[in-house]
Length: 404
Ligand SMILES: [Zn+2]
Ligand SMILES: [Zn+2]
Image (tube, rainbow, N blue to C red; front, side, top):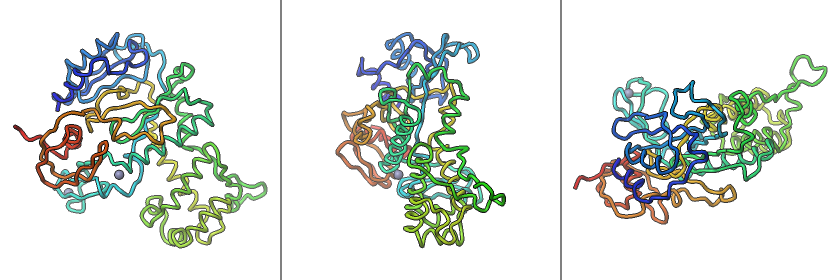
């Protein structure tokens, strides 16, 4: 695999897009062979960088979102001058129903295995450590795209950023990156970025404002009116989606059980129309303030993990370099313009290996598509596949190359 990756970097000379202010970035490389991260490297131009990549043969290439005076120095001597504002939206944290079809887990203690998201404890031995295999599935990546669209909308409307301020990328695996490189935001410190993500996720959102004169708090939710814009709009949108797709399990995830759960499932339509649309939060029997607060808190926490907020607030963060291969898929991180968000097709435009075929033995893989071709599903079989499909399976730990 190291050979395939380095052939890719050797071949299309001139194709690697140059990062903004390349000489002020720290570069880092994750190595195939040693499984270590080589950090604190710098490159004065693209040719130097390409040589570094060819020498090191990395599975993944990163650069700092920060700009430094001395990118090669130790962390405290780098001379931080600013950093791009980065949002990392990953499907791993978005609850979907397709994970049963494409994810697998194996208990590290006893080897017991199953499909779907990993359980908290192994039903075989009670162990808590698992090896998991995910999949870059169209539906999951589609959900990440929806979240990306929502976030861009909010950044434009509430933070006054314009479309030309954003650079949007498919991450090369299961998500999207939004990068803002505008000079005015570069010097925002970590605290300012934290305030931004708190606003976006709705942390600290004051849902219940007590009416004057009601000291007992019973009328707490009466002004809990969610408008259609900003973070309130975002929460309302998420609540609508949550109720529409609600099942006993998803409600239990949000801590809602028993009577409240039954009431939501039985009167879904009324809950949607009266509670959420009209803001009459207590109008469905059995669904009270406490239920709504639980849902709001659950969705807020979900947002915190979906928009990996640690990434956004860390002003020294390393981010995958545009135009490089993702070690977990063999797909490229690629940029596309914001107006193409709805029709961008990662399984066509992020394909790097376009020539030849490779023979592999597949242990298991769900059905998947690359470009116009559909492959699988496969279970324990030898197949000859186009290079990109074979590399995807190998990178995902689902196949091994047949030694010729
Ligand atoms: Zn076990
Ligand atoms: Zn999926």
